[in-house]
Length: 196
Image 1 (tube, rainbow, N blue to C red):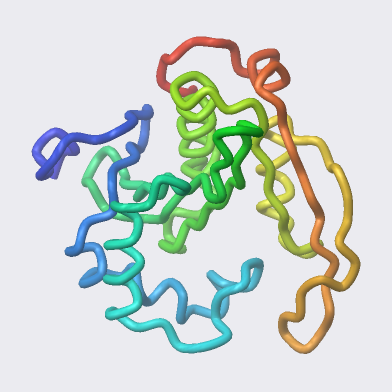
Image 2: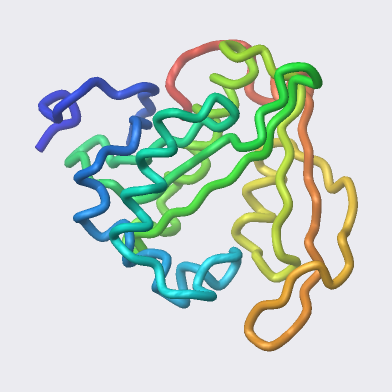
């Protein structure tokens, strides 16, 4: 199935994927299973309690009515398959900043550049359409993929919250990253073209 034949219009289009609003029907696919997968959740705060379809439905409903978060599904362009989510949370319109989060739940899509493409699309949108000035994120010290993505996006390591998380029977430091709009522009330009 081609992206253009899917119900609704993609919100942001990339070369290999597109971002769209979450839909109720997503809860009936593999989405809820991602957060019950210990491997998918090794680097995030999920997989502490079982995640149900009902919880996914509530989250999807909330994603449509919340002005302080922008939560989007990541879908492959070639077949429309929902492979993950990307979000900007805790949007502060006065300080013009927000917290970046991403998960690629479909393990068969790992290592194919989808997270980089989705992240660039979202950051271009929040910097150039929502007029934010700073995007930040925090991740576990052992989340190599997220730390690599943060650096790819031009984020600087800004600090460390010592032993701020407990996962897999050990305390972990949370590493904080941030990027300013002008730093992002220096790295990726001002264009709205699809990311390479």
